[in-house]
Amino acid sequence: MQREPHLTNAALLARRQAAIPRGVGQSHPIFIARGENAEIWDVEGRRFVDFAGGIAVLNTGHRHPAVIAAVKEQLDRYTHTCFQVVAYEPYVELAERLNAKAPGNFAKKTIFLTTGAEAVENAIKIARVHTGRSGLICFGGGYHGRTLLTLAMTGKVAPYKTGFGPFPAEVFHATFPNALHGITVDESMASVEAIFKNDIEAARVAAIIIEPIQGEGGFNVAPPELLQRLRALCDAHGILLIADEVQTGAGRTGTWLAVEQSGVAPDLITMAKSMAGGFPISAVVGRAEVMDAAAGERGSGPLLLRADGKQMDRRAATRVVVRLANKAAIKKHISPHSLRHAFVTACLDAGVPLRDVQIAARHSDPRMTTRYDRARGNLDRHANYIVVDFIEGPA
Ligand SMILES: Cc1ncc(COP(=O)(O)O)c(C=O)c1O
Image: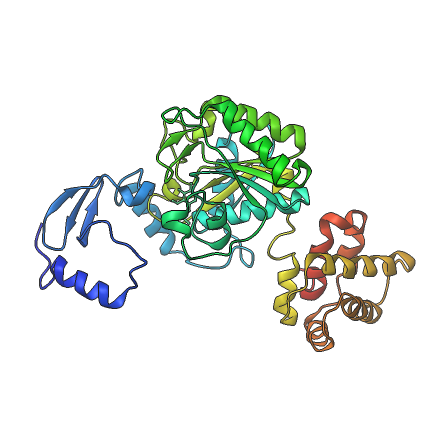
């Protein structure tokens, strides 16, 4: 390959050091000019075999022709619409395919995000809202990302967590088994029981999250027996089991997902990295009823934020809806005017400042009576959607 004119690794390194903070590490002092399958060429024309693959992101190699063709084809049609605003078929098709591939003889649903940490954070949000519990049990040596919650969950202080605390609460670490160091599955399970005894009762634990094979922790394999016993423990206590397959997924361990090799079906699975052959997509796949527990971006308090400039929490939003439902229950059809009035007073009752309520009311469309009537039988599940329907108007 031709040497890139005027570019040397040393000159680029100097520019990098001047322009980019040192927190963004660099394993190799080279700059890539081109990559193809398992090989890369640096800016000085030297050829390398790439064993790193972007840290588990390139199972299909650099620029797999099928991946590149699909991306080019997509770019010629549209780029971003915000799926919640204007949907597109490939999202649905990919969800269907992942639902079919994930283990477990039950209905599944999938959401897509951008990074692995984002998938993990969303899995936790879903688990918390589904169970109504806050506690999380993770494992020593585990790695779940670099955002503050996923750092709290990560079970390795150096080099990830040093200096970044305090971290979100209610996160506890059990011991990962390790044959090399003589740590058995029994000891690992006992460490979970110890958390129930010393730190948080099982009834307040939302989820146990585990990598079927720890990556950053040193490529430690979770024995199938551990995953099976965790499954049983979770079932006994109403805790969700989450497999973090960000690194192990997309066929890296011989099966599509590593957890398949244990015969265990987790409630939620996080995926990212190689699932998109070098492009940034992540996913949470899980039991349909668990995945549906969160009302969603459009339907939750934060959407109220868009209309009124302030966040209304879920409980406050639910109070608003309950009040509206009571009003509609008394009068089967209430006029748009009285619905708007009910909305404003309910928001004020829920503690939203008057100015924000006025802005929200101006954005609101009171023609939501029908949908709202239809949904009121299932207030808990639809509560936040109803508020959003009210604010945004019917689709
Ligand atoms: C198991 C696991 N979970 C989560 C993450 C975070 O993914 P991302 O770096 O895409 O946020 C990683 C990244 O290495 C990972 O290996």
